[in-house]
Length: 110
Image 1 (cartoon, rainbow, N blue to C red):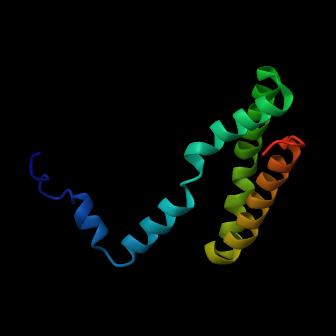
Image 2 (image 1 turned 120 degrees about the vertical axis):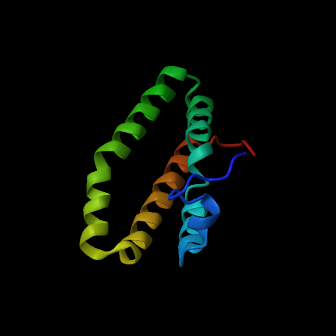
């Protein structure tokens, strides 16, 4: 790997900036679930309904809701700041995922 060009900092140089590691670590930890969320929701809905069409519809609604609520989330962060907006958004997100998990739970299944 070649050395970084003059005037272009490397990732290590960026992570040495004040608060960069803490911000990067929090963002990484907070986004860990995103990688597996779509797969787990798709499999849970498919197993609960027995239909890939229903699971695809649920995933489309999930994606559309995420897209349409992005400006609302951004407005909340702009109005109240990141810290006060994070807790209600995280609780709502976890609650909605919990409700989806409860809705797809099959009685008698482990």
